[in-house]
Image (cartoon, rainbow, N blue to C red; front, top):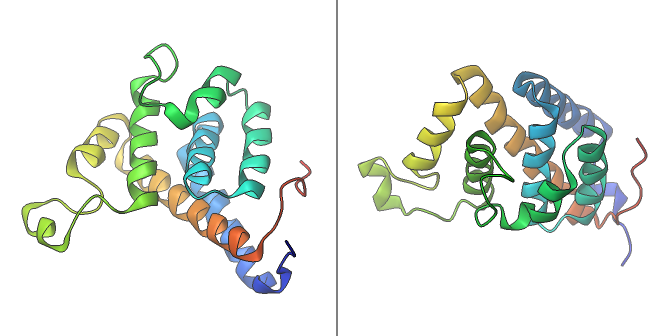
Length: 159
């Protein structure tokens, strides 16, 4: 597979990097931020981002057990992921996949990000932090799509 490096203009990369940095800073928890971006990258099958963010997660002290069980976080016990982490991961999946609703559901307060998922996250994060969490999910989804479209292989990231 040949990389398609021409697909990312430096000005776009700079803007995307700024969004990622602002979202992570506003979230205020580097370990949780890495759990979120690794989970979104798993869902999006972005090998480059997984390689990069698994390394960063380890640097930020995310336990190996959490990294090992992240793909099955809903089935992992409460001793692996706490309620706050579960709420963030559920919101990450809902915002990343966007397949949970239909146009008819919007009238009843439903939609692609179910109310119960959003409300669970809102119980654990104030409005500002929640906004940064959503921004982080949006940012990593952008990166995942760009890196997959560019066919960037894992192994190119150095801390």
